[in-house]
Image 1 (cartoon, rainbow, N blue to C red):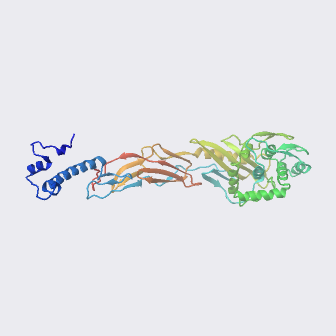
Image 2: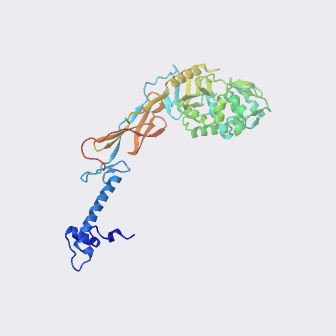
Image 3: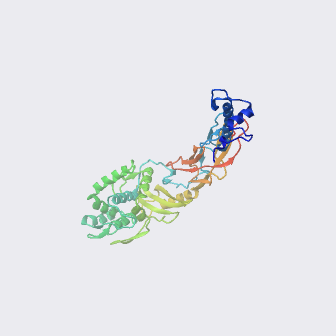
Length: 448
């Protein structure tokens, strides 16, 4: 079929040009083709009009010249209007303090400190940096150094130690010094784990010397390693002059001992042993853990201590569940009354302190579902409010502070909460539109 524009018009004149001439009254000028003529000019005007209508239809279908850019900015349809940017504005407070008043059961004498590992210090009673004799708490570092040189898993027994005459003689020396000890004999074969159980559960001072001789060949060489390891752990105000803690010159601070407690948590064999209530040793038989707090309020270690210089002492750990999270509580009690045997005053003080701490550690809501924490604004108008899909809660205790910050972009906003006490742990979650409102009257921001 031929081109329809090349056929005859309805009234019989030949060609499109003739039809346009008849309708418009225009005639072709001599010497020019059709597109240089007045009919050609008229056709151009007609086609231009059709093109303009088509462009208008396209503008409506794609939303230009008015509309929303991908970044949330509104582009005005009126050519006299300017681009109106969308701003992300925080409406919630930038600070959140866990509600309530912290009230811990501090002992009436001595000194004490307690922390939540990774979150910070709950508080302390007495100086954190004053040096104090620490008695058998010393054996915690002795065991830590042994396990660093001879690693064990949480359940393995490790190598067997055959006791020499010099090793076995440490029992008589301990008894002479009125020190706790376990019976040993020359040629006794004891595993590393059993030796550590005797050291930490029965608090055997002779086993501290036996392990030092086994590890380094002499007590003095072992003490050099102990003090070097203390510096590595950040225990800068501690001095170790014997591996058992009997000497009053073996001293530490509450701050340093909390660092030691943190290190213990990274040694699975050590945490497993200090949580045992009893163990069987080859010659001594069954030994029992002096730490009578085990099992109460999640307490699972770490080490007791009593001497005339140190008084009644305890380095402790406990694990509790809060809001689906396992928290590790670490603490120390020093200088309580009592100089021998089981350190009941320190054990009782630690029980009360842990119980009071656990009663106040919990969750508090920072942002609730449906409550705005941010807004989107254009000019002076608020166009939307933003909030969280699910309420956001933090784990903490009364007085603990957090920073609350809105970030991201207008189209991908987030809410971040960061602890300001202890380690700066943080969490970030996306924000959603809660309310969408038309802009207030004023400068036009309508879309095409």
